[in-house]
Image 1 (cartoon, helix red, strand yellow):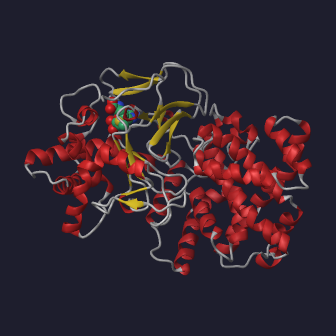
Image 2 (cartoon, helix red, strand yellow; image 1 turned 90 degrees about the vertical axis):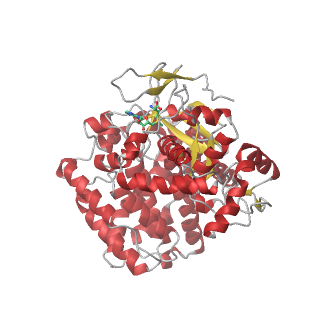
Image 3 (cartoon, protein in one colour; image 1 turned 30 degrees about the horizontal axis):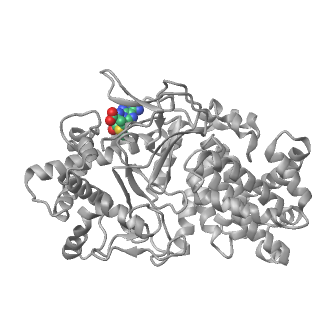
Amino acid sequence: MPPQLPPTLRIHHAPPPSHKYRSLLATTFFPPGTEIATFANPLLALPDGPSMRTTCNYCLSTTTTSSSSSSGRALKSCTACKAAVYCNPSCQRAHWKAVHKAECKLFGRVREQVGKDWVPTPVRAVAQVLMLLKAGDQAVKEAFGEGGGEWELEGNVEEFRGEGEVWRDFELQATAAVVYAGLLEGEEMLGRAREVLCKIQTNAFNRLDADTGMAGIFLDAGLAMVNHSCVPNAFIGFDKRTAVLRAERPIQEGEEITISYIDNTLPKSARHEALKLYHFQCDCPRCKDDLDVYEVCQTSPDTPLNSFTLQPDLAKLRNPPIYRSRVSKAEIETIYKKWQALGNPEGDDEEDHLKLAQARWELCRPLVDARMWAVEPLPTTILQLATSWQSSYKMVVYALPLVCFLSTECDPFKLVAPFMPWRIKGILAIVKLLAVTGEFTASGALATRCTHEGLVGTLAMADQVSMCEALLRLAVHHGSVGASQDWEVLKEARSMLEDLESLVGREQESNLLRAWAKDPEDPEGAAFFENQVLRPINTLSSFAVEALEAMLSGKSLVKK
Ligand SMILES: C[S@@+](CC[C@H](N)C(=O)[O-])C[C@H]1O[C@@H](n2cnc3c(N)ncnc32)[C@H](O)[C@@H]1O
């Protein structure tokens, strides 16, 4: 079947000298959070090479062990190649029909030649395309064939060819794909394989899984027409084998739809470095005026949506930190470059991790002094520490102020729309830690697990169950807007909320929170949220920086 575009979208051809070529336009108005289109029949959808034994190779649902799927059932290997795995027979049949029939023998060749049972993702993707072209697949021919048809993908081949090292790497990968696909290695075939690889690099989206972090690639000929902006009006979410394009901001009928190909909250030079892969000069407003996250947030049409969030102070979202001018944009670029150059520690040595965290924090010092919490690399530095503390016996309680801080002082400025999946994940992180501290509080163990009196006192006074319920109501509300109903994080939030609602003896609190969730202006409900949820979360958040400073300077936490 030739590719088809959903009726909510149309293609616009930009006249020269624009290098944009084609773009996607909306055929109707989309309010923030609404679904623009789904893409359920991709040309390519594959898990990342190393995770192909723990991910269903057809529907791409993930699992943490090789022996059990997320539903508790074992993933079954293809009996012929023993490399591709599936969560059920219908996924296996569908994959066989879609591509595995052509690629199954590839894994035997790989095993024979390099002794592995997986292939790097781009190599497998190119091999799949070459085999589908050979099999005469119509949609793949239109996207990858030569002849400049309407659906032929942009490959920026000449630009890639001009990049010495990148091109040499492409040549190696293309050769491997041809060999593993069992095709004849003539110059024509190798040339075709290189071109396919250029098209995949330019048009496939990284299928980053918000639940597991595992990536893979996804390529749909229609979705591939969407251009980039560092202040996009849309974003893509993945639900197994389907990509969903959603509005991030209001989109008018006839307006171009844009997404961000990269992490658009990084400083300008880091964004441009990441965009090099796509060979164009970004001239979006964030790039033109070198706006930082606070400046983008200030003018975002989505700011009012935050009135039902953990940062409902819209004036704060519209006013950047007062000391912001103390750190110039050039200084931020330098900090970011030095921070990146620090790299990652090898191995699990605690000392090495601590030293690196100290060096990162010291580099961020000017941002800390200017209270520019949402400017990278500061939020990532805090997130890395929060993540490692969450699983540390000694530090788990101290992770709580950090995640509260990220959800109140960093995320709302970086990702203004509250339904963005990473913001919802941040809220769930608070709930999970409150479940731990709630148990410590109930069993009397809190004071022995934490020496910070302010933290212990706040938790002792707080109604941690109501805090969890309010947070879950926020997560369920925004998760239902910005993600699919099958999103694991949303399902988890729903089930936790059900458990809390069924607790006896807290009907009054639950009723107040239900009233607040239905109408955030409800006076009693709003007052309850303000006093019992927002206030303790802000207090916890206020301990984050001192906890970080104390821990990173090797002091135990000062008693307050
Ligand atoms: C995924 S494709 C997008 C569709 C593309 N415009 C086309 O007609 O095939 C990515 C390529 O589109 C172009 N592109 C994307 N965003 C752009 C932008 N903001 N300005 C100029 N070109 C852009 C670049 O050539 C990039 O490599």
